[in-house]
Image (cartoon, rainbow, N blue to C red; front, side, top):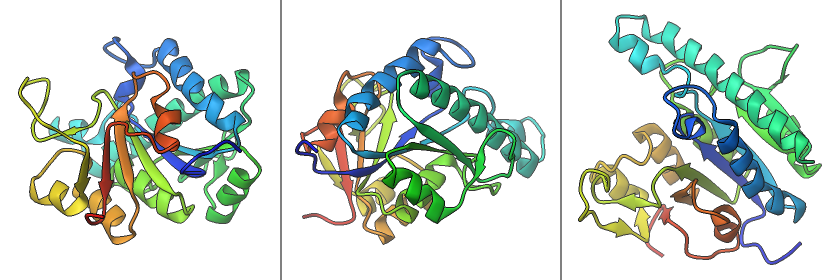
Length: 241
């Protein structure tokens, strides 16, 4: 294996990232771009797990805001993540990457039920393992699912791919003068109320000393460069090193 700093990783993708410039659904070009980013790393033997959200199809919070029962809306959002995961799996396998979809909600006809030991075995066998349906519980986001799965599989790092190239002290879209952090602690993320991921996921990573790298999903070759230890995006750690 070439010189990689991280050899077992969990990649978190937002559902919105799969839309590309579309207002809804999945843009095949975006899925192909993600697959092209993962393929060189996969070929080099890095073990890759993936968690993807469902916001491009349905978000439980939005349903609740419209009067829907929150738990019911969250279950619908979990099903949306399964659609996204199957789309990723199809593209990965067409590019020669063996992959498995494991879901926190049983649906034997289309995906394996998530079992921690089986997931680790898939990774050891060199299969991209895609985790669907969040944690399987309402009121928890897919950010929390990503933090949980990263800890469960013993990932070296959690990588969060977003539409911006790191963490800023304010929204860089709304504030052109926003300052980007190269490194920041989880405690600072919580105290500064930076919208990186929800507080439950942030606390889970902090408590389990799980480093996280936030980078742009649109930047070419950023995934591989981050795994090699190059300075990409923003690195979040449990304490200052």
